[in-house]
Length: 335
Image (cartoon, rainbow, N blue to C red; front, side, top):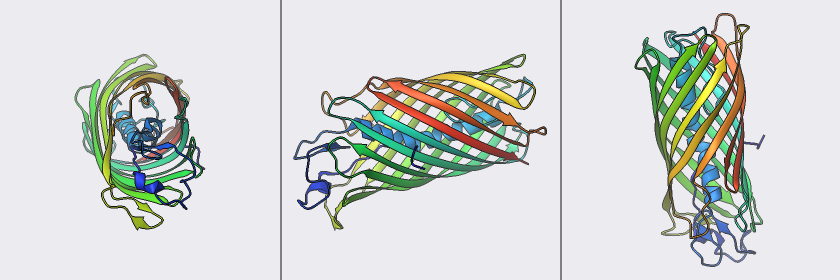
């Protein structure tokens, strides 16, 4: 299934006249065909959003679910995109998995692109104390897409490992943080480039129960970076073609969930997203709106003992000339 980070591919990927992408000029990430060094910010954003950013959001939501267990009849659904159900942080071991499928489109004139990314995250954590959880995740992502004017499809695969923590500061206030690293490989036509990934994020959440209703507010900062090695065109290494791409975001959101008393908990939410910095910089007139809104709707399911639970969700991120649809599914085992 190919329904669902910041990447750059150097100019050398189109140098050979016989390559699969020498037939037409087009902007690809940090390169525009035939000598114009501009960027394709839509593809940059789509790739980093669907990989490192999505992984950090997934981890944060899983930790928020685990930590927001006090003051109400049931824990909440998670905030933002991931449909991770919740439990009690006091339970010792926790194993969870999340699959996300995203499709991001850039519709600006002359910059059209579409990237579909599948992202799978598996996590394990342990409650060191009733208020402190430590864990680690492994993730794998697989993306493909199309860029206006490019004859060949792009393909991007990668993995990452990320330790994380959750700290219940007060009955209502919780903090989570994660930091990770990994590797990726980008291909288009006969060109390819390998990358080393690093990312880190921190979030603060506040939970309030009102009867069977639960309101969760969350604010966070996420940073992701990919360092690309020298690219290859038809197997030939191009010296001096490596460089670094990065993206950092601020996210602030609120979500409401209702415990129905029968193992079902629906929820809705909205999150404001702001890209603070993206590198390499796009040329004038090539940028799209750096601020956006993410709406989410989902439902969680619990067994009677609250030791096995899961959920489904759909979210839509909207900006000027850009949209990102994401479906997620999760499962959680606590023992």
